[in-house]
Length: 235
Ligand code: SAM
Image (cartoon, rainbow, N blue to C red; front, side, top):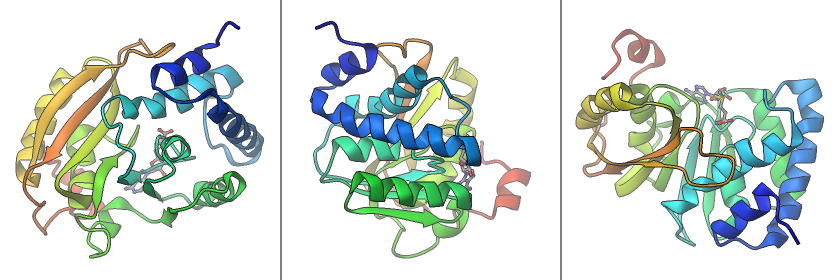
């Protein structure tokens, strides 16, 4: 049987085709809720499979572990955290989102898919990052389409455990933003590791994954307030 791009993507990631069923259900709920709650600009069903689901799963190319704790900051309707959880049942996943209607959708989706060890948190990254239970608590921290690198790293670093991974999906020429990110990283105990172009069906359009390592614990003074971050970006 000829595989479609999503099925081929699952195969290339070493994932079984039986997982497709959960993703079809996720897509059905996403597009249905989208008519009322405006959760995503991507409305074409095939594009959802590739640009949301497979793009989220691309993180597995650099972080294939079977056991991990993951934080997804500004997850929106679940990207990339929820697709990753579908394929990695032993991960403990925290989905952080500032907008209540998206939080309601996420809780519904976790329920529909019967996922365990997923915490959906309604809040802002710059506030939750000072709570002891979340501080330096995660093996992997990610955020897709939330902010430019200096702010993104300031959001992520406080949550990342020592020697943990910060994995950030980005698109297009990143040289200037990476330079800014490196200046911010130096203040956050983070070092830059790699910039890898995606090689998955339908995603060879300048999408890339930036990997950063938490070499020292992030200083307690970060993250600053949203106002301070906007006024004095680290990079
Ligand atoms: N990550 C999802 C994706 O890739 O489709 C959503 C991206 S959407 C453009 C950005 C999301 O980040 C929004 O849902 C917004 O509410 C959330 N967000 C922005 N700033 C945030 C913050 N400081 N803390 C938590 N969530 C935030």
